[in-house]
Length: 334
Ligand code: AHM
Ligand code: MG
Image 1: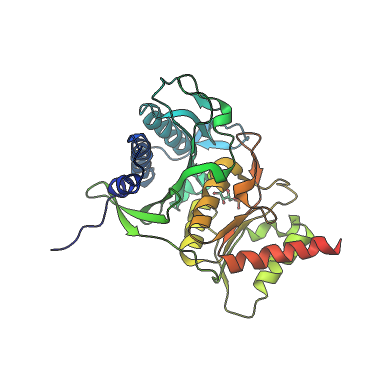
Image 2: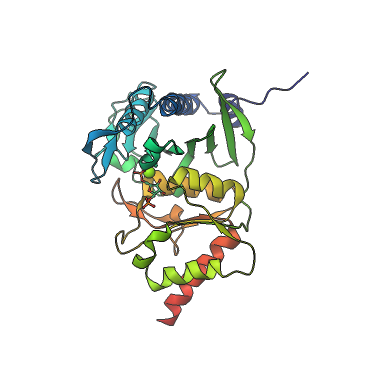
């Protein structure tokens, strides 16, 4: 008899079985995120026909144009998560301030952060986009509204993180700390099926993923790190989609480096610490890779604001080491 791969929910349920005190709330929360990702995948795939292409006609808190699909993805996540009663606070790239939810004593154990539609500049071009999420345990008192501090935790405190990439297929990748696992959406049955069990990032890869057009705005140390990486005497290549989810997904599976360093236009980096860098950092570390801002582990960075930015370097351990050593060398010389 042919064995069917595990569904995402079966996989999460099995993982939770090792926690004797588990109430099912976490599984329900993850089910809501997975459902939202399926709904978003459906709209992404028919964006042209469904009239969701183009701009919504407003800018978000970061001054960026909001696409109609950004809005749809954000509303979908907020709606599916709010109605579970498992979350006390929601933070999103598309929300200027967090949504704090009223909860009873037994509700709202979790605080959830998300980038509802990452890589939105790629939507109108039929290129891969994605959703990124991170889940914290609530740190404020239960039985009342959640607090912003429930979301402002370092990524090391994440109890789960993941993403869905909407590419030539839709793949959902997540970790709860015990390995990193990938599931491919089978649209004919509407289920995510286990396709990439226990993902490990190769220590050394051959791909550098960076926006080379920022070169004139990099400082000397960053320039040295890029050159050092490219000067290795082995076959290398470069790939850059411009959707963090897609570029990070490739680096997670194939190794190499994804880098969005600080530059003169983005002195604190471009990517957001809480809902882009943090979840990706947990995934890379749990898959045996590395994630830093070049100097400090992303997992240890203490956020001050929901929309804090950070430089981000993700990759296999050997590739990452080469980059950070080149950066540090520059500093020793000063
Ligand atoms: P977004 O969340 O508004 O889509 O912006 C984040 C995106 C990342 O997905 C990607 O890594 C980066 O911005 C690309 O930036 P650039 O176009 O400057 O290379
Ligand atoms: Mg993004």
